[in-house]
Amino acid sequence: MELLKVIGQAVEGLGYELVDFETSPRARLLRVFIDGPNGVTVDDCAAVSNHLTRLFAVEGIDYDRLEVSSPGLDRSLKKVADFVRFAGLEAHIRLRLAVNGQRNFTGVLAGVTDGRLKLECDGVAHEFELDQVDKARLVPKTRF
Image 1 (cartoon, rainbow, N blue to C red):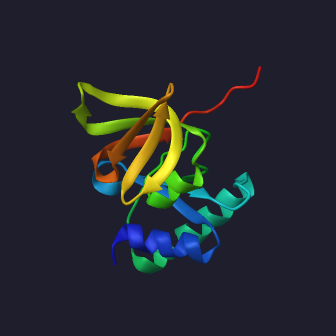
Image 2: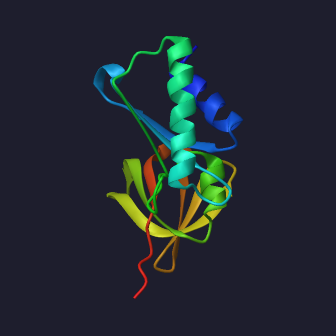
């Protein structure tokens, strides 16, 4: 079974959302980012880590180190549901190909319609095909 699928099923079975998954070369480091309806605590991360450790032993998955954490304030946006969930928040978007000579945009997420991401940048509305988004991250707000 594919590693991402194994991890996704396990995390979701525990009641969390698998936000992202990264591996190092040769998959020696496995990094899992989880979220929950009310965020995640250190105890949540420990519970998922313990469960995955036991699961990997049963499945014969070889690795050196496992890290489980929250996605952080600058969480990556990967799925359509992420862009919908965080509508109204500021995000940094990098496109695969430049549009009018620009690949990087920062603005407020305005939703997704028919596979097109809507982004409001300084009063200017932009739309991008979701499959043209290379990377997307929320921009954390600082309070002062």
